[in-house]
Length: 171
Length: 171
Image 1 (cartoon, rainbow over the protein chains, first blue to last red):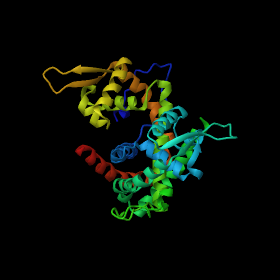
Image 2 (image 1 turned 30 degrees about the vertical axis):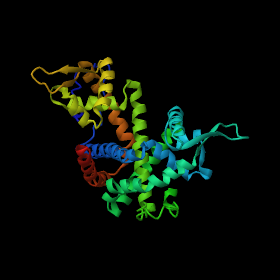
Image 3 (image 1 turned 180 degrees about the horizontal axis):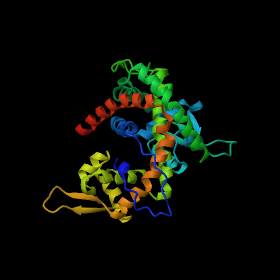
Image 4 (image 1 turned 180 degrees about the vertical axis):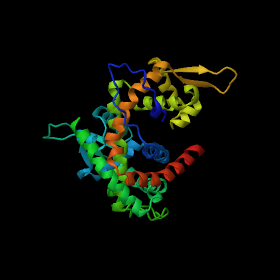
């Protein structure tokens, strides 16, 4: 980016700029490739879910609930699992409730709030959509790497994911 | 995911399901690490732009315009460069115009529509924010890989980005 070559000569002397650690060309190209793949892949997977009338975030909720015991999860835990704010999740669950995919339920004897519960229709939707979705994930991402690349990328990304989860947990 | 073990026995015989190519455990862990890093990294970078009153998409627009000749770009090209729809970009540019960061201008003699132009204030904002942003990108992503990992990931991701850009271009 041009940011590499920004002229800092007019910074006031009272605020001497620390040397900025601009990305090298090799770092930059990897950073841009990551950003581009992340963005374009989400776009493509979203497009391929459209015939099922599902947003990509809806699909994620269906996956998480289908993996939870009794197909239900506390709203606060679901927000953590899907890495979104409680208010945003609440809006999404309302939409999905209107579509018949989930139900909000109070749990008797548990005052810690509401659960989101996968409905029969939500489970059937998940079963119907999952085969198409996994084919999309293969066609546009997974099958484009060698087994060695898959393992190397996992080794590289897993500690970064752990670092970022830690930051998120503290906030 | 439990999707691996979905019972397909109740599919109607008139629609025999092709064998679904579910992800293996090794593919699955890499896929999840990618999703998690993409999502958490965007969250963290957004948070660290908040003190500058910038959304991460605003920052991206500032970068793209600052790299364009004369710091301006046709709206349609800017939509392509930032991989978003024209209507969504239009809303975003309106917000950024209200914040004094960009201006929409008609180009005399060019009937192909509007340009977005970086203002002096937009350029100054970019110069002020870029050093902090590049430190965030290093701290949470780039500096967490070895040079060999950076190169290997670029080699793996670049063809995927190209594939996805091709699909996007056709849509």
